[in-house]
Amino acid sequence: MNLTIRPLTPADNGAAALVIRTVMPEFNCVGEGYSIQDPEMDDLYATYSLPRSGYFVTEMGGGGPDSYRECRGDWKAAK
Image (tube, rainbow, N blue to C red; front, side, top):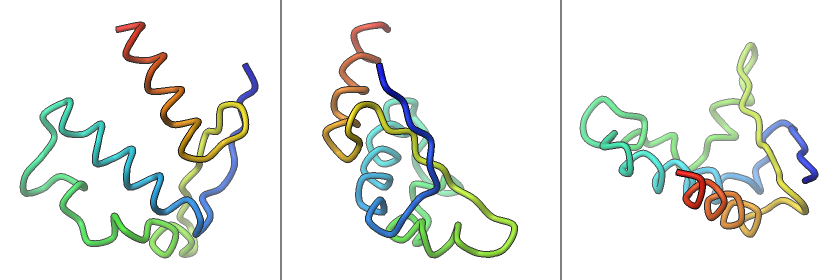
């Protein structure tokens, strides 16, 4: 398996929000006070490109939303 860790880019905003909005409810992390409700969720790049901030993406294979689906499938099977 080929894993790459790289800084978040503006093109990652949609996939990152999808991962967070999908996974957090699975762990009952919803409602007031959870990041899933934050307006920054739709533009994580803008928030984490500020000085002394960082957000990293782990890609499996070629990266992008298909990698998320592949990884999520493997994770679900391993649970």
